[in-house]
Image 1 (cartoon, protein in one colour):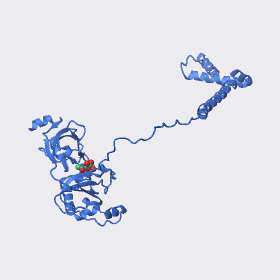
Image 2: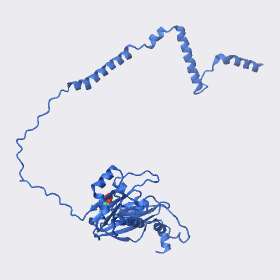
Image 3: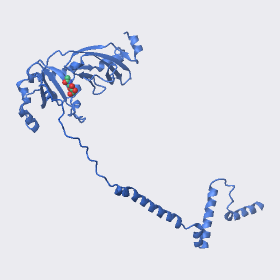
Image 4: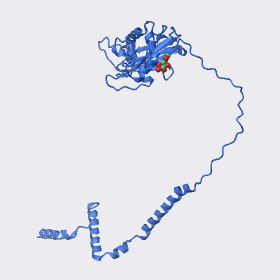
Length: 371
Ligand SMILES: *[C@@H]1O[C@H](CO)[C@@H](O)[C@H](O)[C@H]1NC(C)=O
């Protein structure tokens, strides 16, 4: 693709050729999504101008024509400024072509970019009848997946196991195994389980993990005597009490064969249907839930009716009881109030002029005009 056609395509969904990968079943597969690679896909010309961006990017991964990833594959990315990882362990039944669509979204320019990862899962290459799982307390899954960190951990386990013929079988975050989300403070980590396999038997020291004494020590939480693990980098140290061995070299004992009976059920006697339950008296319940509330409502209605109909005073009765002077006083107040209200609102001209106080003034005015 030359540069002009790249400029034309910028802003549209760019599609690059598929990325083929091959991996055997039963071994860990890790694919790192490098942000800097996609950065140059988004802005191919900026390198010429010496401008280099560090855009936040997010990835959306799914199996082609499916909404989600295959069961064995997982995706993780800590935040948009970190690389993403596709990782997981395919099982023998996952053999075949797995096409993964990866959508990259640039969170600054909102350009998108699509890539296809074609993972060809082949048959298992190595027999690993001896497997061991270790818990690394002070790590997070994204920090363990890069190849160089995996190598550091492998070297530590190599010392423990006494063989270099080790392969990673599985790496899982403790969160996927029921672990707790740690506090967002330095010094708190999610924890990672790593599982390695070999065709060489466990070392003598590792076999101590299977003794009853080891179990007792770990349960009591006291001093651990059998720990022979080493770690060159302190954050890679394993937790001895949360290590486990899986010896797949011994054939698993077959499930006990079910005993075959004669094929005829034993005679259990005549069937007698259960008795019908005893009769229940519902009358007290009826009284409490229906009659008592009804009676209360009736009494309240009667009281209210008495108050409304028999205890009313009436205007005529009240006026007859009031002294005349008081009634007159009351009416003048009422009239004045309504007159004020009429003056305040509506058309002022339709209102009679208040006479009593203006009359002398008007007369004086008239007299002055005549003179
Ligand atoms: C890897 O670990 C995950 C999480 O514990 C589990 O679901 C998966 O089956 C494991 N895969 C293998 C091949 O052991």
